[in-house]
Length: 325
Image (cartoon, rainbow, N blue to C red; front, top):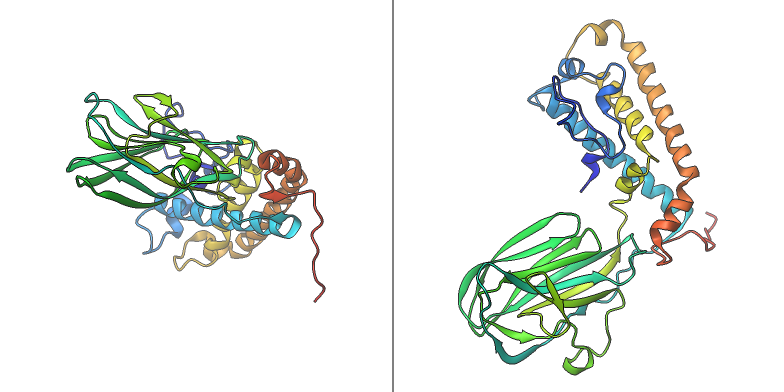
């Protein structure tokens, strides 16, 4: 989940050159009055320190904002959340592929067919490995945005090991590999009619992979179930990267900070003598957030059309009929 990267938190005395730049370019600690000291003044037994309190405030603010965004999209446009059919990459043959070179890897690579469908994600329910030897090893799953998953597996000679991973891939490609020096049974990466798959996938294509080199004939004992489904959970991050919702995120964090200050059980100068001003500041912050979201929505349609790429995850062109109640 990338929601924690949308808006940043500047720690006291943090080196600017080493600080991670948030996707939106906004920092919640730039909001007037929202400092580590003021956060510490309202921190209670739920949080150990002001920084933990800020992290939790940001988390809750971004979840709230994402819910507001998706609710608007569902109200305004037609949203398709139906996944494609599960497709299996291949079926095993009877011949054995001998060990390869130690230190290298081999397996299968999966690509999205239509790169314009940015809202469609590759989802892998399960992976099968048909080993010709008994060994404990590591299966590596690597996507194109730099995320790597290492899965410990215990392979048994002559058995097909089934791994329930239920993994949603970010990016347009995923590589699934084992160390090359493992003896496995042969299987094709995209066998089609010849081994039981009468239809090819409508959303992905697959190739074999050996030490970074692709092929169309061998997947080295790895068989994958794949489906594609529309996913809006990363839409906020894309909007932030394109400078569409940074201001809204900034205003919401500030508004929630002042709103929660009115509910704290810790007394300080502001909560005792400035409570009416704090309430007014919170209300003004929520109004600024709503206005910033409305401004972002003005440019949302064209953005969604480009993100969807004609795949109808979000249909901005059709007519949506609502029943009168």
